[in-house]
Length: 308
Ligand SMILES: C[S@@+](CC[C@H](N)C(=O)[O-])C[C@H]1O[C@@H](n2cnc3c(N)ncnc32)[C@H](O)[C@@H]1O
Image 1: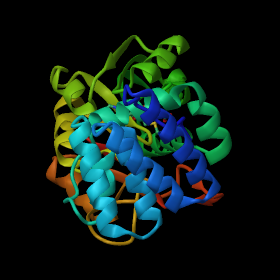
Image 2: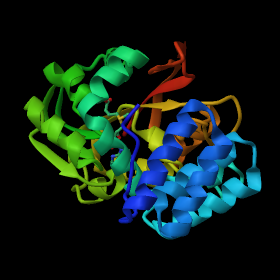
Image 3: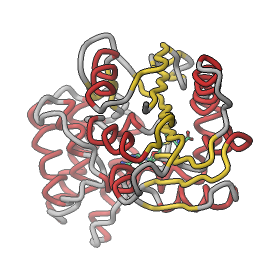
């Protein structure tokens, strides 16, 4: 997991209380940790890391209302929501399911970047890019077309694992990602002709019509609740005959939910209807897992859709 985000209160004593509280939390003394965090917030009322951690501890203690109150304070202290307090409010049923705060995603992956590949590939058995590659080859084979693409856009490109999987089949890659630290690593691969620090929907909006032959999103749509605006832009940006290939995490019900791991899971019916609503044609939808959690495959879908 990425290093934990810490935003100093600017008050040395409050920061020290926070550190002690974290030690106690990790040792399992949650009540004493909560007490110290309250003291820290009395010294520094805008101390977002303390409010957020207090919210987590209240959650762990099963104190629902107190957890909500602490996460609300964290949101007031940091309206950008770099800790992701709003996601906990969604999980606690206190906020409607909505988009993930961009500052949270950026902070998460900026912290994660140095050990992203070892953590994901070695520890979680990540196989998203390889699954997409196989699915795209199969989709092309089915229509007897070569699996070669002149221009590809890699959404949520991260450190460049998807471009690496498709390198022999693509001429020109554009990578888009919210995290500057992940983009730095993608740049170091030398695989991308162009890299942009941007939100994926915004990045697509800046691209001309019919300017891509392949759009990839490996383990990136798990950070998008509503897929419709994204799929509409993909349809516009794809050339006729072009493909979109992506992975999502899924669940047995309808619609979209936020999982305990703070990633969205999209139901199969939702994925099918969003693709149809965007005017794309579904070529393949397979129940395949892109990664493990606690050594168990996380339920997932590998999807390929085309523009005709
Ligand atoms: C789990 S990583 C996957 C990276 C890469 N696609 C791979 O397969 O290794 C998810 C990436 O999506 C990026 N991301 C999440 N939400 C995004 C958004 N709205 N716009 C652009 N990038 C986003 C994150 O910054 C992160 O680098």
